[in-house]
Image (cartoon, rainbow, N blue to C red; front, side, top):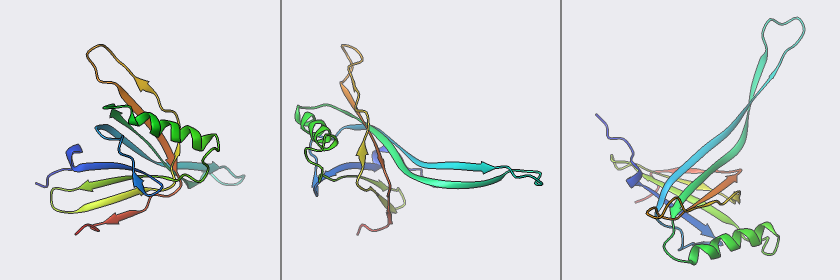
Length: 147
């Protein structure tokens, strides 16, 4: 029986202007959504509706534990981009899956736009978590591109 992909075999990196953002590590959850929409229309003289699908891009979020104050600069840079203080800043989120059979897939979420960034302090004994939500138009995949 083939082994399944586990979280320990998934790597997440956030790139800003070609450099890895070093304050994002200890990612505990990564969610991705291929955003599809179904359109339907009904016409006179036909017994069933007609359907089409539309691809609306990709969305996702990830949660990470906070180790130091560097992540605040990451959040500030996102705010600065949204306020058009640094409109030329480009963020890419890269997920690499390393399969047990040796295969690998690199997903590059290009030019992501950020949504809500909630901070969670659940209790005295829990780690502080930050959740970053994003959407993008393109997500090319590279299969077995690593040596």
